[in-house]
Amino acid sequence: MKSKILIATHNKGKFKEIATFFDRTAIEILSLTDVGIDIEVEERGTTFKENAVLKATKYCELSGLTTLADDSGLEVEALGRKPGIYSARYAGPLATDEDRVDLLISKLNKIGDRNFRAEFKCVIAVAESNRALLISEGACEGLIISKPRGSNGFGYDPIFLIPELGRTMAELDRDEKNMFSHRARACRKIVSKLIKRNT
Image (cartoon, rainbow, N blue to C red):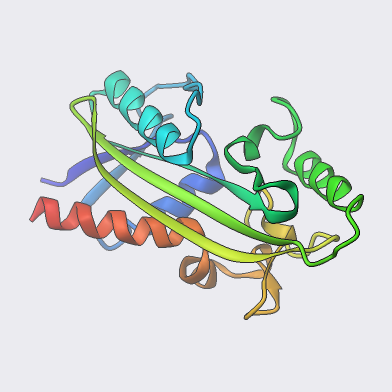
């Protein structure tokens, strides 16, 4: 019998990215829709880790299932590491990805230096019996460009350039993104931990 794990996100793009890493495992993945949960857990933490643990434990409590949750975001050096944990809420609660990208670019356009170094960060937590059991982290360094490029991905992907590739995160196909992205790096670690735990 397959073990089950709930991937606790309402973001369809994020769900698809995380789900990919369970394709060749004996772990059955479920979405919040699958288990009938439509509430949004408030991110009250002050770090990616605190928010990941908060979401994993709360959705675990609501579902009764082993639950995986992540918190991730973009840190831009020229903006004092912002938007950080507020990446998804940067332009307000009803803003679109395009709104957030436009706001970030407008803030950077007011700064003279164009070498906008940035880092995508991701922390994943897995909770069981309402407590966090496993944690993993991943990061990806890059540069912010002034005009979006690419149609893959979501969020800030179209303006996040990976220098060694010369392409934005949104210009990568799924396999390439699963090699370089912050979430992919965190996912590989957490799936490895889950497999070891289940064997």
